[in-house]
Length: 214
Image (cartoon, rainbow, N blue to C red):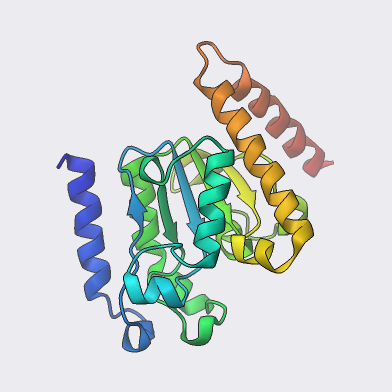
């Protein structure tokens, strides 16, 4: 076990003992997250569901099966990425996370991101996206790569719809598939020697910033 793996294991132990919000009282198991400590890509959802709560494994229910299919479209495997959530315990009845719960859990995910140092953060759904882009709307922001400054570091962010939303609406599933294909293409370009993709993203990001100032 290398240093990154050891630190992620420590964070998981802290999550298992966490009582910062009341969710630990109703949850069956904590769901700290799972995957490679060397991941190029981190996937972040909003909270564990029923099956995740029972197993302690993120995205292992119906939405998880769809995510696995989407990972294939992106040329990725579960064992090569890291998958986690904004909340580490299941909210009762799968209700939306409360602001105070998100605040209580924030430090764990921040530390996981800092340890892994991914190239890209893929947010699954609006709650995860709003962690980095508080005012953004998922219907407008999905499928777009952008730079975000978070905890004194710059990351490439790629918001997509939550797989559960894609299960409910066929049209969103088709959109999700296209977004993950776009992720595959972007990762390929990013891996090429002297790839201009970051430079292109910087130019686009600067243009958007300039437009926002007009």
